[in-house]
Length: 265
Image (cartoon, rainbow, N blue to C red; front, top):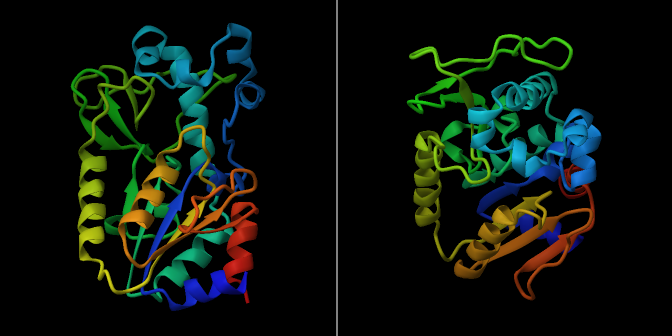
């Protein structure tokens, strides 16, 4: 543990990467398996619809009321739920470094809500507080709650430009209509940040709550840890703690517990 703390203390650059486990300690569902998903959404269990089927752009074309019942609940839940203390603890620590960046697959907007600069944030799966048209793919910010009645959305969200049904600007399964304007800009910022890193200075990749079901975050962190000559990966996860030999260290802890253990007084 002390060696990991020393790495964090002495590193010049910090990359924070996070998956659903980071959100879990704020009280948000993670959908790690089908049963967990159906516990949160019993109406979809009754219809035999799993996460991959509802988190799909085709749902907004063929079952828009059902799709919006699911996503409006998530949208409102994410807006109402405050980020846990770990976000602010990490931000304060990150600001003490020469440079930092955040890479997350979470769509809950909690890093932005916590004050992280948008120019240092890559939300690779999108952000639920942005919507796009299902027709023109026009993009806009939607940070107000969506009215619901009896778990349904009486007035489906629509595009303010053409009046067609809208959808969240989230990268879904089998999604060829995702408007990647925000994601592409963030990806470019991330690429430029990586290019700016001094190869002789220590980079720590602090990965928090990234699982193996959708391994995007784990893969990207491991790739950078492999390519940067002075990088170490620190993996915080309550279950999936395996790490390639020589890349770094792992802590079998939840997100908030791990942050407190490493950065607490």
